[in-house]
Amino acid sequence: MERALRLVRPSIRVVQLCQSGSVECSPVYQGAVWRTIGARRLSSVEGSRSNFTTESLSESVVAQLKSARKSEEILSLVHTNELSGNQASLALSALRNSNLQTEKRNLSSDDRFMSLLGTLEGSLSNLSVESLVSSIINLFKLQQFNSPTVHLLVSECRQRLRGMSTRHLGVLVCHSKLLAKNASSASLVKEALRVLELRWREMNSPFLLKRFLKTSLHLSPSFVEKLEDKTLALIDSFSFQDLVEIVQCFTLSKCHSLLVLRAISYQVEEQRSQWEVTQLMNLVNNMRLSRFYNALFFKEVAAFCTEHLSESSPQQIAEMVRCFGLLRMPESTLFSAIVDNISNRIAEFSLPELQKIAFGLSIVKVKPPTQMVKRLVFEFDSLTFAEQIEVCLALGVFNAAPADQVRKIFESTTAVENTMNATGPDSIPLQLKLLQLNTYARLECQDYKGPFLDEELAKYPKVGEDSGSALHRDVVGKLEAMFGNEKFFLSNVKLDCGYFIDAEIAFDNKGEPFSNLDYNTSRDSKNHSPLRKDLPEDVSRVAVVVHGPASYLHESSELSGRRVMMVRQLQALKYNILQVPYEEWSNLKSDLKKVKYLKEKLDQIIKRS
Image (cartoon, rainbow, N blue to C red; front, side, top):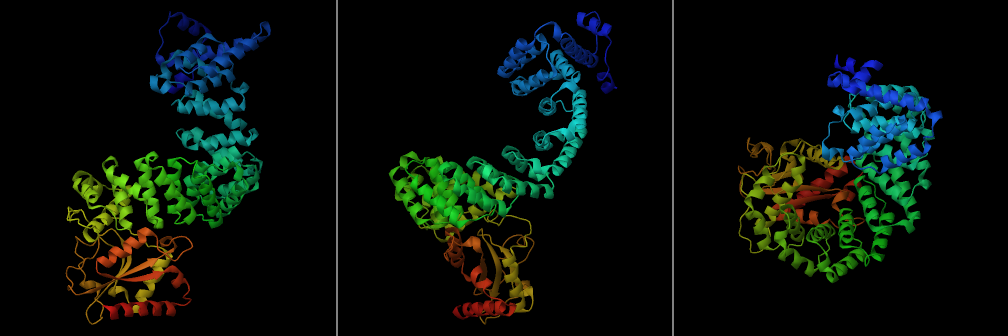
């Protein structure tokens, strides 16, 4: 009923009575009155345009609307000027960009706003495509999802859809999430997308392509492929900044076209004159997140960073270390220069920047400068709890985390309990780091006597079952073939020391494997590591550790710093380590050779123990 009333067009006499205040109207009917007033004002303006010059007035109103920042100022302009439909659309844009959110104004009860909507409704056929599309989007951003004006604008837009440019179609599609709040506008977006898929060859705007790539999660796979093809075709048209943004779009949308990323890396190399450190780090980091590695390009970036190190800010230097650390690329020239730079400028760096640097250096096994370690230790209390854990773990890689700083972490009982009791996938990385630090404190931290994590808290966090990598599954499968079945070992073992191992085997003093039925698999322990409290003290334990490509420094046979720390701590826990490097494993071309490889390694361990 209310919707029907809103669509009513009041008679001229009713409008006059409402304007004069002689007749009281309901708020709903009053809105319809003001929309009618707006529409008639418009027709009056258009009908009398030949009688007086409006060009200078129009330009003045447009200028005022563009410069206005307060909603009251904009609504006053709407009330005191006779606007055309396109000017009314401009007023909507101005309202959307005004201080409306801070004022918390209810536009639906404002007669001036309702009059503005009436102006739009009365000039549908005269609206430019730009005004039509922007009006729909602006009304949604002004929370007018179910306004009758929206339905009229959407209907008009649908009629003009096939004649629109790809840019206007693209604007509709790029706002698909916003326009999904109304059934008719959601349907309009789907139609616009179908039209675009037929006309994708017309898309020659780098800006539009970037917008599409940002919203590719909402697009069909076939259309995303066409966008990638178009990106390749226009690759020479993009600036360095454009290419950085496109790679970021790939990361955000989880769209990983290695062909496009490779072409972008080549194009960026051609644009070296446009390079800038912050944007380069953004580009390289997003390439890493998209699992794209171009070693030659990354080395070029490292050389550029080395050349511009003296003029780089501490924030940029910290990002360099973090970025190349996560790439596991220990570029000796770059890191040597960075260590010297930090030593000479230590006072310029903030503590979070130094923590980020410590993290990156620990991955590539580059020892931090003494001045940096001293500052992190002296100002340790200024770091957040998570940053403190990161600093101690980073120094722990070099077996150099100070006992006093480790103690401060475990004495923060509230923070420790909150961290270990947190739920959700986002909390798991920090929980694992705290478990690893607890292991370091127990086994390696010199002069440290406690406190430690409470036994109830010191458990591997519950995570969903993961089938693991193809390499892991292959090794576990060959272990099963070697033993004849899977009952003589455990796979996917999550240890309470904070590490995951691919498999665990227990042998008695005669070299015979225990059945996994002998393990302590009670209800309390099944969700974390089988510590085998029920097995003999002299049992020989073997941890099968598979080292994939991510375990090694780039183009090196050396394990990364964090991986070295893991192996070291497992050995301190009395594990015999059966390490399976991926390069050795991939060179074994038959199942028989793989089984023989594992058996020989296992026999050597049994003989030593």
